[in-house]
Length: 283
Image 1 (cartoon, one colour):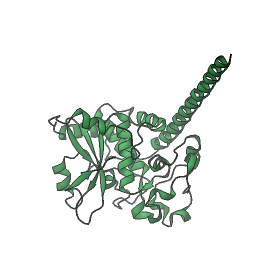
Image 2 (cartoon, rainbow, N blue to C red):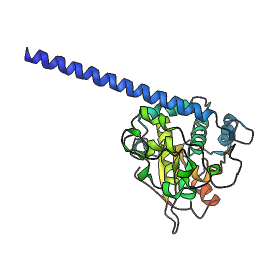
Image 3 (cartoon, one colour):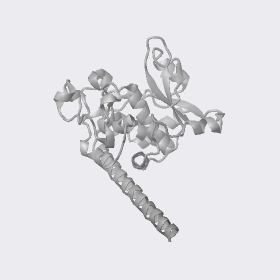
Image 4 (cartoon, rainbow, N blue to C red):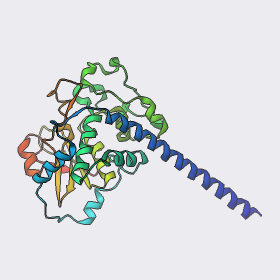
């Protein structure tokens, strides 16, 4: 009798946990769909070319590699980490929405690249007090700063991409994960750009590294993605022309691609001051 009651209690608790998991997944999906719908309204200047056309252009530029990386190494850079929470249901849903229109793997990476450029503002340049993640997250996904008023920024809002309304995060639990919070605040430095890209790229199935410059006097972080048999560099921070002051009409964001799918030699030639030497982080 006691055993039967214990089993029934276990079954009831199990069903409650399953229901909660479904609820969390549904909430995450709705939040992802809402964020993606906002992204679709953004004006991305790609020189009059569609992402499909641009992806075909890059396909011609990318020389296939030797495909000599071990499966163990590739698996290690496909895993979820604190700096790349790629298994969160919100991330999985959002990544699938972002890459759904793609006609090739190159276009998937380009769409993720463009999403990060849309979402992020380089806080270290424009908003120094938001240059670290400490003040951005509290429990249950509540943002410590909703960042809706220009007074919170201390700078002209013309330089700041509109933050996503705070209500989006109330339905999902980002816990204390600063990377998940970036999807809603959009404010950080190069490590935020790199972590956001790595999160979405790994969720889409691309082994992705977060690398840091080892050059004296340089503190910079970007990504390397294993694609077409070799590691390719993608630096969304340096490609974010909107933030770097190269395009002043904030009604349209210029999407630069100088640092998209570059070889180690190519990216070092493009910017020898920051990209000539690096180390791979453990994230």
